[in-house]
Image 1 (tube, rainbow, N blue to C red):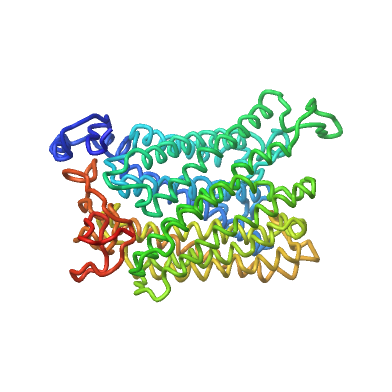
Image 2 (cartoon, one colour):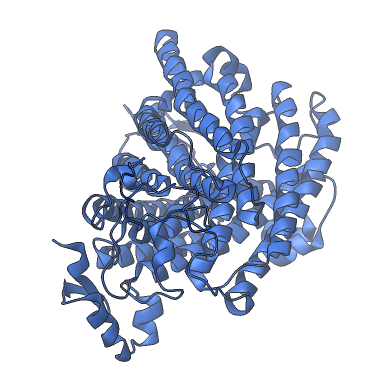
Amino acid sequence: MNNEEIIIEGPGVAHGAESATDHHGHEHHEQHFVWKYIFSQDHKIICKQFLITGIIWAIIGAMFSVFFRLQLGFPDSTFPIMEKFLGDWAKGGKLSPEFYYALVTMHGTILVFFVLTAGLSGTFANLLIPFQVGARDMASPFMNMLSYWFFFLASILMFVSLFVETGPASGGWTTYPPLSALKEASLGSGLGMDLWLFSMATFVISALLGGLNYITTVLNMRTKGMTMTRLPLTVWALFFTAVLGVLSFPVLFSGLVLLIFDRNFGTSFYLSEIFIGGKALPHIGGSAILYQHLFWFLGHPEVYIIMLPGMGMASEVLSTNSRKPIFGYFAMIISLVGITLLAFLVWAHHMFVTGMSPFLGSIFVLLTLLIAVPSAVKVFNWITTIWRGNIRFTPAMLFALGFVSLFISGGLTGIFLGNSALDIHLHDTYFVVAHFHIVMGVSAFFGMFAGIYHWFPKMFGRFMNSTLGYVHFFITFAGAYLIFWPMHYEGIAGMPRRYYDYSAWESFKHFQGINEFISIIAMIVFLTQILFVVNFVTSIFRGRKMTTLNPWGSTTLEWTTPINPGHGNWVGEIPEVYRWPYDYRDDGHGNDFIPQTTPLRPGEEEH
């Protein structure tokens, strides 16, 4: 089917039409607000829905971390403001032990899945894939709309769980059985856990609907001349992200369904020989380790589902703002393939202390260390791209550079945890917390911020305030290292994570000063993110207006659409592509870039 013959009208029915100009001629049939902005099938509106929902969740998840950092930093103090937010769970301004673990659980769940998976991939896959491949919209706009609304339903279920009488789920964000499989195990194993499980199952449906759509769009909806080897690295990264999700999320879904069965229908998939109050429960034959296999088979690809979009966007932003072609374009694609394949073969490095065979553990050590190779290729290529470049230090560029820095430093600590002998000592300590927050959490956020600052004009037709962007970057970058770097030393000393109060431990009392310092910095960084949200919201309505189609001097197709493109993106025919996406050099007319839509000159060879 010819991509240029696909037009989307009204609430989103796709059909053939004569030309895109005719489509824009239908715009006088003004859509009702509900169909245009709420149940929209336009990828640009859905992108904003994912982004704004993700920002709301990020504020909630970050606020939870501030609450439990107050407890960790000042265990003997009371904070009346917490009672205003948390009610009976923080009577007298003191966080209850039960709710502390619930906050840790919800913080991890919200940020990993609802912000860095749905918020990141949902936003930028929707924004960039149709724009950069040259498509009017996604392959299935209706399925795209459903993807968001399943995510919204999952969000509602998760949000409701915060208000049930027994509290939200409190089995850790991994919800290992038997704690999560027995309703009587703890307060957080009650209704809140059921809502958590149904919310996550709904979330998986959303991820699968989106992923299948992204893959189909990249493979089938490219404009004329847009071969796979002319795709921007952002599209490659989002494509492999979708592949990872489609292949791994069903495994998590099966694990969640079996856990729902154990909790509600008397099965024993994960339970065996459980005693409560000296009385044996009628559960025989299950294995809690089975759940870990199912969870981490998604859990490790999930790391790269979060990381790959940031890698793609950092590549784009670094090349654009260095005014240089990306170094090693094909090596970058091959490294993405390597990461995608190896991501499925390393899940058991999360399980070195479960009693697995040391021989089997050594295989996972080897595979874990191997995955550092394609990651190192990407780091080398990013550094070589910016080397001797004519660098423009925009907020997006700074966040992309911060992404590279955090990815390197966080990745290096992963070498320790990938070694089974060292992991036995470091497992479930603050070393693990520090490692995955830097390499996966904060660096992914930096990739997300780079994307927001860079493509904000494409989303809203205005610019974000750069001065506030610089303040946001420097405080967040310094804060990330000041929060998580000291945690490595706590972890090496054996300090376990998820404990409510360390003051009773002689071994860890001397870390109290560090914990206070970390908590203070965490609050400063949280307030800085509020500054970003204020900048984001005010810039939508009052930011400096975009006056040129291509403000950054980029080469890719999204900057050829109108400043505020209608549903269909291009007026008239979709541009044809003639060259690769990183042609940053003198075009002979005073510009230092050549767009993909510029035909090759006589005698010119394509890159």
